Amino acid sequence: MTDEEVIAGFQLMARSEGIIPALECAHAVAWISREAPKMQGKIVLMNLSGRGDKDVGQMMDILDGKL
View 1 (cartoon, rainbow, N blue to C red):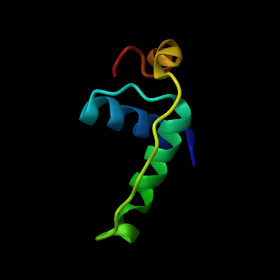
View 2: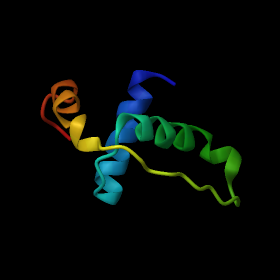
View 3: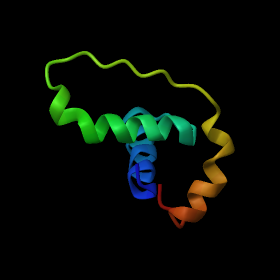
View 4: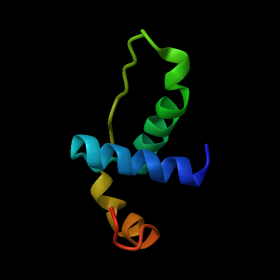
């Protein structure tokens, strides 16, 4: 998993669901996004845990304030 994929996963969750994920969860979102074409028609469950609010400052620096 690349940093860019994790950042994209973070943004996807924040934009589509209004949830600020912890970076650990952003890794899962990134993996699911990458593997989605192979999982068409299957049920995928993902557990969200952690506190994404602790990562917001770091992500805002990375994203230059553009979430």
